[in-house]
Amino acid sequence: MSSSDIRQGLQELENSSAPQQDRPAAYRKLLDQILSSATTSPDFSANLEAFINSILGDNLGIVAARPLLGAAVEAIKAIPSPDSKIEAGTAALRSLEPRIVSFEEQDAQLREMLADAYQSQEEYIEAAKVLQGIQLESSQRRVADDHKVDIWMRICRLYLEEDDTTSAESYLNRAKNLRHQITKPELTLAFQLSEARILDARRRFLDASQAYHSFSFSPILDEEERTRALSSAIVCAILAPAGPQRSRALAKLYKDERVPQVPEFGMLEKMFLDRLLSPDEVSRFSENLQPHQLARTADGSTVLAKAVIEHNLLSVSRLYDNIGIDELAVLLGLEADKAEGYAARMLEQGRIAGSIDQIDRIIVFDGLEASAEGGSLGSRKMVAGKGLRKWDMRVQGVAEELERVASMIQLQYPVSIFLSLSFLTLEGQGVMANAIQTRDFRIRTRIWFIENAMITKHDIHPFFGLT
Image (cartoon, rainbow, N blue to C red; front, top):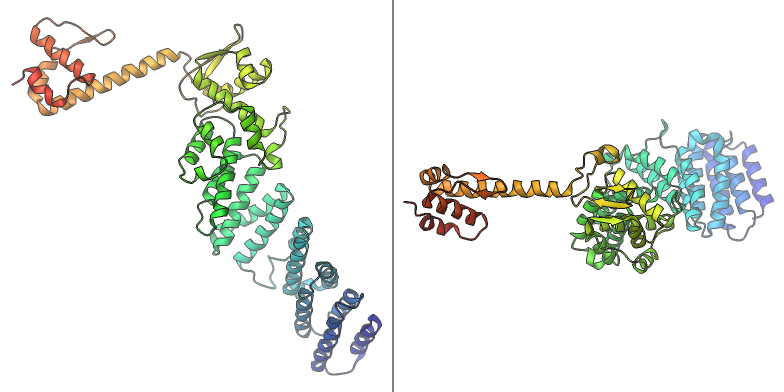
């Protein structure tokens, strides 16, 4: 049927004096005629728009118009061509716009259908914009929390496809308010994955690694998706700033029994064991990274290059007590000034322990684990004398072991050991002194031997000669 015939039929219905109850059947018959020419008539969208404008006019009431409009929406959904579907759906939305308050349900159906059509053509921004027009907070209809979260998460994922993390995060935050009221497991998974992707895109790699790792344990996912999530968790942990927090994240991932199956295992193992990374290894690893993970930072280096430099610097601090700035620059493949800058920043943030002697151009590392506190306050709390700290720890260890052995002996020989230890004194660097009598010397010597695990507990009684 031609466009002129459709318009003439609509005009006759609008001017008809037929009873109200007979008009819906006549409109339905005309709609069938329009749909029959969906694939042959070039004026299909114009005819459908004219039909919707007519039923939304004053000649039909809202109650009679809603079923006809619902039938028109279903007819648009049945159109096979995405382009024709978008054209017809857009025309229908234009007609609904003035009276959207009375037809919110049909408007929502049209918008979801249009979003599907745009998404099939990879026009993600247009699909997101169409979905944004759905009225989810309305007094005209009740929308379930699951459906609200479904729409918001779909908009979030559409923006993530175009790397628009700002818009995606705004809709993720809306869904976060209803997160604990979600009953569908797939919506919870969609939320977790979207959150991880946003953290990843914003270069909050430690948080993203944790989110991906938690996501990889979901029993709903198939094995391939869980492995992909685990790989993403490893990549984010590798790209995170070097320091105690990243070391804990690497340890958690390294202990996961599934990690030998993923391609990133070799890189993870080297970083966990604090081994230096070669340029060839870094180059191979970078081949599978996302564009935002290869973006350049403020100093001109890429995110990966910065992570590798900081890791190698941390590894150097575990291998050497001290190193010249020029030698460090050679190991890191940087200029001396840049190498010193990286070291100074990591020292200031408390990610490695030590100090820089700028006069002699030497960096002295404290062999103990760096403080997790960032900034100069954390650095000031570190003790500069590594040797003294190690000596204190060893003295403390010897004292604790001696107390343990003495307690063990006292439990079995409570009276004898009390009398024996009354003659025992330690002086200086653990050297036994004041051994005047032979029996006293034997007792003190055997306690020293027990401390060094040179005799067993069963030898205590006969060797001491105690009765």
